[in-house]
Image 1 (tube, helix red, strand yellow):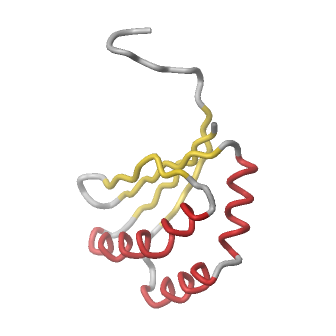
Image 2 (cartoon, rainbow, N blue to C red):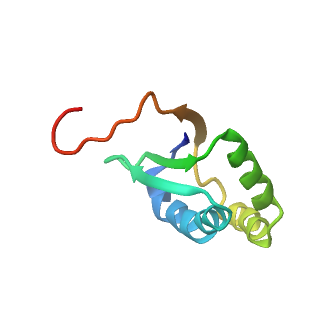
Image 3 (cartoon, rainbow, N blue to C red):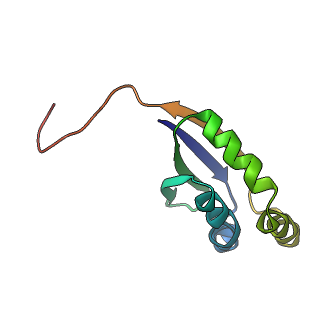
Amino acid sequence: MVYRFKMYCIEPTRLEDFNEFFHHYLLPNQLRFGSKLVGRWVNSEKTSIMAIWEYEDEDQYKKIEEKIKRTNLHKQAQIRKDEFGSLFLTANQEFWQMTGDYVYLGGTK
């Protein structure tokens, strides 16, 4: 498994707009083609959002992204993103791999 950490720096006033965009456009297309959302968080200042996605490998991620780019929902998302203006200040993503199999059943392993 590989995990994609996607982090955005945002203006706190844009949180609701960004959430709307994510839930209406980004999430449905990702799920449709097999991405698995592990979780999505915002910090207490509402200036950073982080989403963690799980994939079999980076190749699966690339294939999913190519499929997404060909959808009408993606085209609609680009139009809506332009209407919103700048939803985020910066975006960064990294791919991480697990360092072992960590299954805890009430105690230490």
